Image (tube, rainbow, N blue to C red):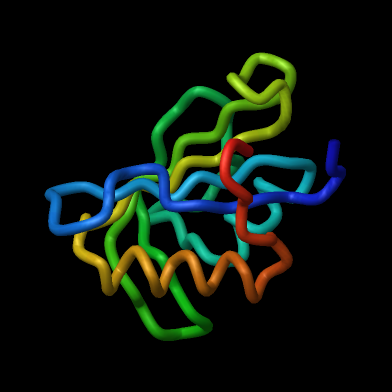
Length: 111
């Protein structure tokens, strides 16, 4: 078992209306707070959707919804964040790379 925070695209490859990037681990929320700017300020409350943007510094990458599930009431029993953005490969890859640069590691098969 690993103690690090993992990230992966959780939706099938290809074009789709919505694509999901899933973070799981102790740093899931801090990483998400680094790459996601909510429309309205305030705390990220568990089990509530937040609307905002995926950002790289001042540059907006995509519109997104953020869902935060606090451990142990998540399917991994760790803190989990799901970032739902547009489903094309470009916004998903850009969001995945931002999460990796922010401290997550790419999930291995089965994680």
